Image (tube, rainbow, N blue to C red; front, side, top):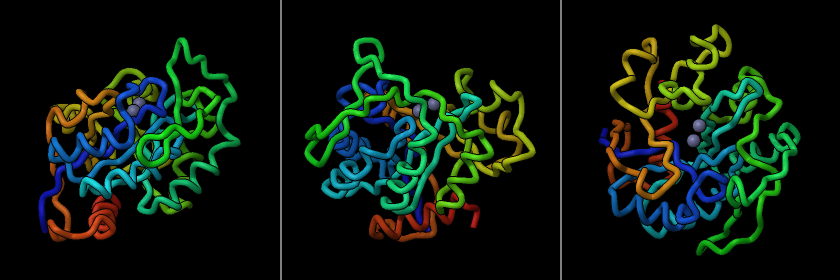
Length: 239
Ligand SMILES: [Zn+2]
Ligand SMILES: [Zn+2]
């Protein structure tokens, strides 16, 4: 057992609201400097910068996690994480038909660059990424689980797009035994006894690692990224 610092909700510049400086390399570099050992990249409705992020993390000795922050049809934000990069990319592919084809207006919302390693831009997502998908909370959670991932409501302590602000309480279905808060202080009051992940939802480099959060994992501190990720997913699954 060892304590690992983590942040499981970080946006890259692919999210239109994410700062241009939030490139995969800069996030990995910042994690290294700040001492965050495990970082999940969770752009709005896209996992397309995860391959570049994985490469960048390799250089810095940070354990990367692939995922996204899905907007459900109810406008609830849900963190979706996958143990394998390939699983995340398959999920990215699977959600495409459910995305709203609302053209991204770069001058208003910001750009949505897809990057390869070394932060080289290889493309741009043309559709506004944070727009609600046509997947309901139940459908989206079921889809993530079927594809081997973990899904839980994001920032339940936030008004905008938080599950509690929208539904007023945790629904009976789908069952969530895990939830995310941005402020640790809110965990006990809002989680209803669920296990809690505290993450930054960073959109700028300065949002990132303001406070360090720790998780105890059944894993050696010097273990490989694969081993650390496996231990993390076991923990998130409640095993
Ligand atoms: Zn959100
Ligand atoms: Zn977010």
